[in-house]
Image (tube, rainbow, N blue to C red; front, side, top):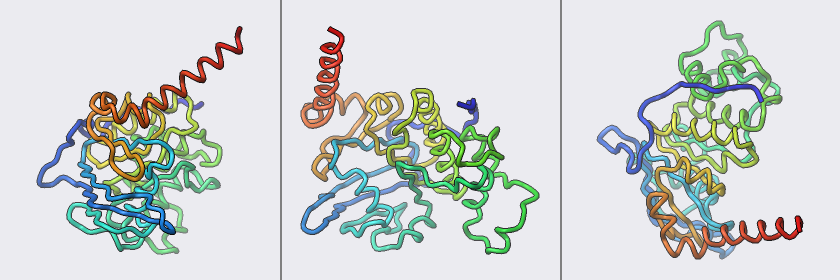
Length: 280
């Protein structure tokens, strides 16, 4: 894989509790509910997500994690309230929520594969420009695009076609596209799924670089990744918040051990026993 290591920083590192203050951004979720044909997928969720607190959202399959993100970003209708720094999001359309600075990624990166890294970022940055302006060749690169290239570690690949990037690099590009749109709330759905160990480390470092001055929520199944990079954790189970706190607090919660971490540990043990049996 092409070396994309970067030392770029964008401010303070994320920390538990964030850096809440008069000028800080936040996302407040109150009694959020989502139902599909009588099935309640998100059942009265309350969350307070503060700028500077790198929040991981974990839980077993079917816990409601992705549906919660879909509701916040307007992809599914929801009841209850989601406010971004006092502005209500529930009831708004997807593009309206995006214009308020709420961005998300999906498990499969959504990039323009036939275009270069720079062109992808330029299109994202120019969402408000007219079609003719978008078609003209840019003679200069906007400072926010240069900054995104450095922050994501893709500066050396700026002229590379996005379609030939490694899996992890495409995810970093998608995050960069949110950065150039000035998103200050980022909701990332399993950003390290399918990545190599090195890519996971780079992604975690990227989240640290961008998380100090933004509200970043990571939906994740990779427990090692969560332990290494989360500053706070929310555990969902059955569409409800089961536990919340630091990594240590959540791991020590008997309810979490029973319904999620314990189950995962048991699965790991079963896998190890199977592997041992195969080698006998």
